[in-house]
Amino acid sequence: MHILFCADGTKAAPWVEALRVALPQHDIEDWQPGAPAADHAVVWSPPQQFFDEQPRLKGVFNLGAGVDALLKLRLPPPATVVRIDDGGMAVQMAEFVCHALIRHFRELDAYEDDIQQGKWSYRKPRSRTDFTVGIMGLGVLGQRVAQAVQHFEFPVLGWSRTAKELPGARCFTGAEQFDDFLAATRVLVCLLPLTPETEGIMNARTLARLQPGGYVINVARGGHLVEEDLLPLLANGHLAGATLDVFRTEPLPAGHPFRNHPKITVTPHTSARTLREETVAQIARKLTAFERGEPIAGVVDRERGY
Image 1: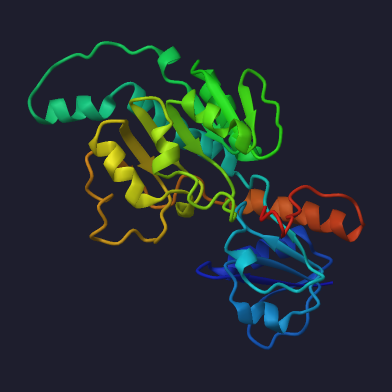
Image 2 (image 1 turned 45 degrees about the vertical axis):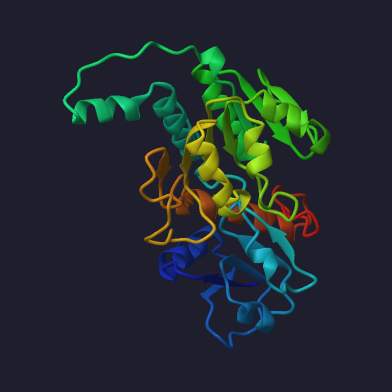
């Protein structure tokens, strides 16, 4: 079986070697234009030329959990698209969200500012019950984040397109329950897939539904947030701040107002990075099962976008 690796901006050699070790019975190569036809592909941000030259692919295994960019390309009709379930990202995402949440809740930014100004002051402790965390998106990553947040005894809500159950959390479903979810939330965490339905889901109307003093943590995709709608809500005090790891344009342009905003923490799309060892092992398992005709997790519904 012939497998091609095509990942823009990624050093191919370590990945190809790791895939060869995990799948020794198969022929695995780094893609070059004009390469012979392959049975499967392992990809990240491939060019359209890759798929134009590989019309008979049976499986396309994405190196990340997000497939929004991939689905914008013209993919071979017979290809089954498979995304990573975790790849070592879930625990990283939980770390990142908990750090952002606790830094805000414990007012550590304010303490840092006080120290820099020569002040030695204390702030009144705040109650966790006043900081309900609402998580949008209850897939593998969302569930892991919810579990981590619950460990610190914050109330947790969940919202998803289809009905989900999450131990210890109150879950909301669909458009008809979305406003109720927002109204009960003070710290909003976005872990949704980016689809036409979720594009711009965090906007002036929806963010205004959050409880006063709300806080936004976006670790999904920049397209979920209408960036210009965030600033007025920070200015009028309805929102206390935001931690943003993803943006509509990356890298974030030098003059972008988010870069130096006192209420916004910016990180360079690093909340969770794909780990090679875990990812290769998962792809190898899935590809082997796929060839056997067995069901696998992470198969993407092209119509839904995830």
